[in-house]
Image (cartoon, rainbow, N blue to C red; front, side, top):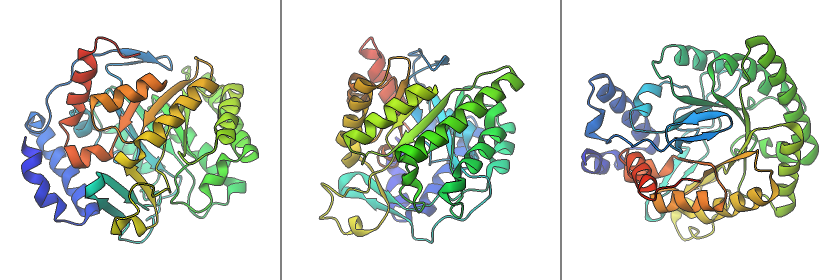
Length: 343
């Protein structure tokens, strides 16, 4: 495919530069009606999760399109749903560059981007300008200079802005690249935050006449007690889904690679087993009414099947697109379709 011819050129560039160039090129192909040059259509494998109808269970993970600038182009790849963000109330540049690193031998990435985005108002304007009418998730977080004691204010501000435009909203409490953000997964902080979000969601549902599902995205590095606490609080507060997982701070299996010494979150193939284990633990701890979205190391239909068999209702990918190309989406969906079942 075209991507495999272009990959050596892209990999010769700084990863963040290649990321921007790849997305802009995809925008151009989509506007020209030529997205089929890099991706073939995905079959319908419909599933209903969180009260939403998905044309297939394979979604785009948050982080690839932080500002929602490439929604139409990404939709053309055959995803069953998209998640954009993470977005914060105010624009922020994120951490200093370089902040994105390839571990090619492991088909992995390390990033310490730090919620770089143009702010929630810019994201909303981009959503308004898109023609996409599929399932759209929005991932929200706090600004880097907002203390955790006031973090709920940032999440609530984002929730209010994106609520009329999102199919579901995800509270990101698990990025390792914003100082102390993962402390929001602690028992007291977590319960206070999701209780505030659930209360505000109920108020917004009455205002707009539409109940938008809420999800939380958790880290893969939690112990069993932490996972059980998350499951207990999510069920008690009426949260609709858990996304498992974000990137890991572990370097198991890649410690011999020079880039592994870079701080940040590791994603891609080395994360697969760890993320799948968290999915399984969550499924055993959660009621069936709470959905699980499995993400981490998915690069084939077999990888997606592992997550689904472990208890996920939907799956997401990101890093594998860098290594395998945009045609991977349709390949995975076709592989799942050939199995005759999804859940």
